[in-house]
Length: 308
Image (tube, rainbow, N blue to C red; front, side):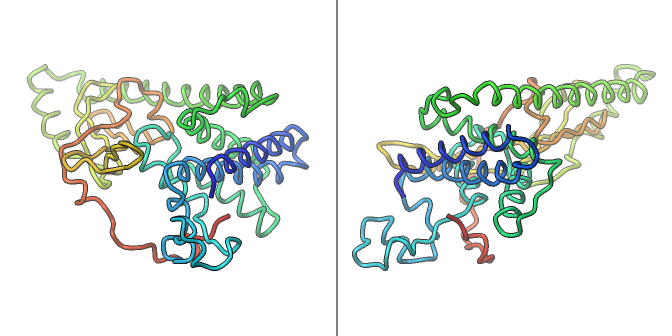
């Protein structure tokens, strides 16, 4: 449960993952598994750096005793139960609102690949590059928060890291531009024949309410047609870090975007492509009581807490 130990472990596992990746498809099972372990350990390094209790199963009292310095009253340290990759990711996302581009859905291929290899010795060969790229994009902002030199962490694989990221970004930018072109064309077909006043009346009616719903929606100008679109996402409490302690801002919450939709031109963009629309906000501060959005119920799934 030591942050420095977890960082060092993450570095070793990631180097092993990239070494396996460059060996070719016959070693890609090792690559995706090791990359998943490396990512989990780095996320835990960030959490443990705040407090070791953030990486343990909150329902396992002996684990909490070890995490809070009362291990002499608990069972052996080797019996400590910690959270897994998915829960570590969820906790880091909440503590770093707007800084982690990989959401829960994006994380699924990585979690599935890591678990598939670990438990069943199976994984999708066609997804190896995608899985590895998810790891890189998740790890980079955490390295920045931990003030870890990326040259040191990636070592001889820094060029490979950059190429994988660049290729993924290129594909996403092409897909984003295609969506914009299609939306602008459709908007012109629908409203190009109308007078300005007539168009304004119609647009005011069809864009007044969101057509997509999540935990919260907020109006945002559409980057394709300029009409009012809607950003939907998950609302998170804003954590204020002071003197090593986190407190919650009692008056504001952070809307972390998951999807944008415009009823006027049918522009519909998910999380992965939102990053490439510079006219859209990366997040939105909203006036609200954070406790209205906090779930006080513990997870029902016992397997959700199985981790390293």
